[in-house]
Amino acid sequence: MTARALDTIGRLDRRVALVTGGSSGIGQAISTRLAAAGATVAVVASASRPKAQGVTNIIRAGGGIAHAFIADVADPNDVRRLVDEVGSTLGPPSIAINSAGVWFETPLAELDDARVDQLVDVNLKGTISVTAAVSPHMVDAGFGSIVNIASAAGILPSPRYSVYAATKAAVIMFTKAAALELAPLGVAINAIAPGNTTTPMNEQIRTHSDHAARRDWIEHTTPSRRAFTPPDEIANVALMLVDGRARGFHGATLAIDEGRTAGVIS
Image 1: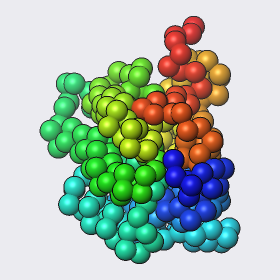
Image 2: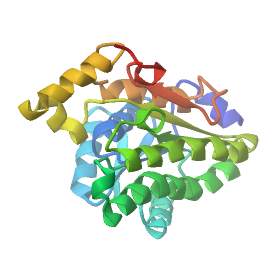
Image 3: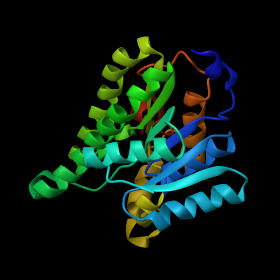
């Protein structure tokens, strides 16, 4: 790690962080947490610049530095355009968080090619494209950190979510394999595998009366008995992986899932 990187241990001052999926949920929590630690954050939404701008406004109101961007991570050309735009506007990112993702059921009896493609293109190919676009800049600088948001479903799947689980399992394996290339060059790539989290993506499950039985099942089968993890806690894990305090992580997947992937309880 270079002297510049060592100077930023525990802080992210002068570092540019690119966060896909940064306009809501886990990505928003990570964006605000990195900004609070001093990073200049590129908040990336998939299509709505106003959504990304809303998060940047929150960050700026708290004294942080952030700028709004949009990109379709399923399109490698758009990803390359995004990285170039962030680089010319803020400087090359030395932190990248792959948080853009989609989540929905794909029961085998009702598989739809378009929905399968969407899961693969966003969750897996998007992670690969962003990593491929940002890592050369990090290698040139001699240091950098990439964090991929996988899922506990990639470790312990649930019925009716087979394609989602497959994409997240692939993200975990991609992270391991990419680390073998990047670690010798000073770049760390790791993954976080959240379980059920309090995000807009699952708001209906958490709040709607029609899902009461499912909520009860989630709570009963969760070892900690806390059915949903706050995204701020996941953001704290992401910060730990990029701020220099834990330099030995390469190709790791950290499960923050209330113990769900530890085993089955009754």
